Length: 178
Image (tube, rainbow, N blue to C red):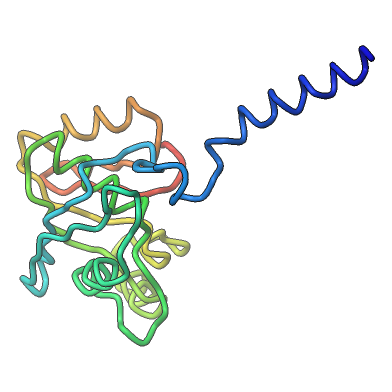
């Protein structure tokens, strides 16, 4: 009898911990990334001057495909590539936008392998295995007086990659903290 009671208790405890793992329809999941803003981000591509305010995450925690397509377009992802910008990166950019009250101006977003190789050949300092190729990194322009503050804040969280170039651009990526 004690064994049966123990097994029942284990099942109840396991069920308690598994409830949050139910599908989004049954368990409301609104924030799945460490850094996250309000679900709406304003982006401008510095090269093309295209900009948009994109509501990329619904209140239910879903990510509409049309919003993702708009973000991909703003980052310069070719529609025939099959590549996408990481939603974790978008969420981190949204966090920076919300916390520091600034628009996100993307200086360098998505890079094809060919484009990245050309940058390297010209001595542009692009990493061979750049996270830009995977849609997981963005160089963004911020006000000079905020660059170091943003860098310190994100670096302190130890959640992702953040780089400070010494002027107004910073790098934000979804790689390990460094």
